[in-house]
Length: 398
Picture 1: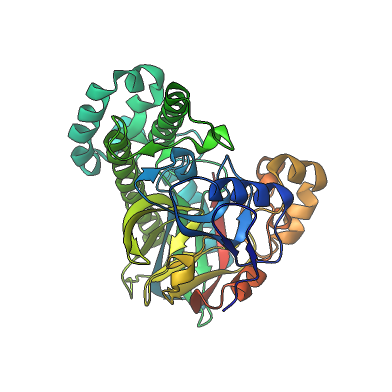
Picture 2 (picture 1 turned 60 degrees about the vertical axis):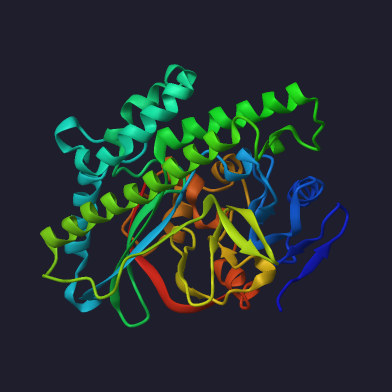
């Protein structure tokens, strides 16, 4: 057992897999524990850090209620990774630079999206009717969020912030592709809308909360099923978004590297999402806010920061974590603080040997702004076991 501390200040215990817990994160976890529908306890992963209302790196099992802000606005954000038959000795720096340039051309990043002639229209088709049904029921969604009009063109795009595409090597010098993204603008729009709606419902019902961002929808109330439908749509969209990007990235590799094939199935895992699961004798809603599912034998991805190691892991199905694991290194300082503390020269030093941007535009993603991924992994030795250790050769940021 590697639970480092158990906090009992609230109404339910909080089991924490790290000794490093800042004051705000602790306060947010205690606030969560005071909600009347928390099931058994709250699990805080070793990469835990403060978020909006609910703490990032938390696993929250709830009985007949869901907290939209705990799911967040990047609904379905997660990782995908694929191992190829290529080895390091088949690549050189020139080829990797061409790959970097090709991926940068083929996969829109930041606020960019695909042109109409490059849009993933066939992959988008199954999403149209369910989205129409949702917006017919909530017309203010389409009115309030213009980015809804761009969801087809945003399918197969990276986004910004901590999203990335990487070409990595493992401990056997085998080449991997790994990427991190979610449900893009439309997921953000859905999340924002339902978070605000839940707040207004709390006011209407005169329910007092320890934090307004912990507003929730109880089962059986008018908007609960609509939110579940929206989240399911966005989570599926996020997974397909990663699938489409993976196709584009592998095609970019094929243009500039020797012929190869994938040697295993693509690994894909959400780390901002909610789903129905069975834990401690009850069917409950499990929200993983910055955490991956780690059932016994299940493969997952725990990335480090830009310039640090990442890990392919196998879950151990620990019930105390609700079969979960950390989703990455976790930030140790805000983006603004990182931009003030570090310089582009620091970024170049900390990403030495990686083909990536090294300018002030990505300074907020410098490795020094993140926790030590190896310490995170050591703290969760009872949650997952390491299958592969990856180190990036190429990194494209949003």
